[in-house]
Image (tube, rainbow, N blue to C red; front, side, top):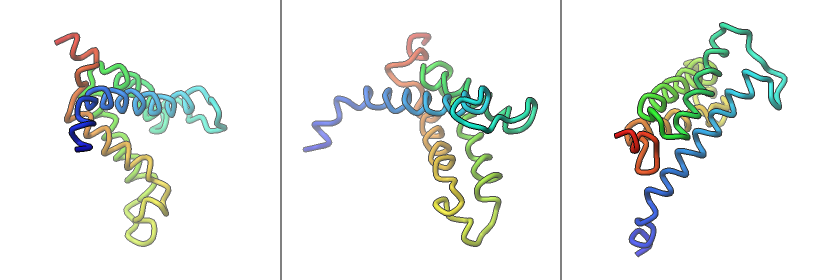
Length: 131
C-alpha cells in the first residue's frame, strides 16, 4: 500500500536526490579550491587539488543532470580512490571499518554516484532535454 502511494513521486524524488548529492559534492570542491569554511587548501597540481576540481565540476554536472552518466561515473571512481587511499589504506585491522577510518561519506558517495551513473539523469535533467 505504501509503495503504491509513493511510486508516483519516484522521478521527482530521484531528481531531488541527484540535485542535493551533486550540490553537496560540489561544495566539497569549493571548500578545497577556495578555502571556504576550512583551513585546508591543497597545493595546485596535487592529487587533492585534482580531486577538488572533479568534485566541483562533476558535482555541478550531476546536480544539473548534464552528462550525468559520465560525471557520476567519474565522481564514483574519485570517491572509491579517496576511500581506499586516504581512509581504508588497505588495513584489515580496525581501520577496515568505515566508522573507524572516517570514510563513511566517501564510501557512500562512491556507491550513490555509481547508482546515478547506472540510472542516468532521469526525467528532470538536461540530459533528457538534449535527447
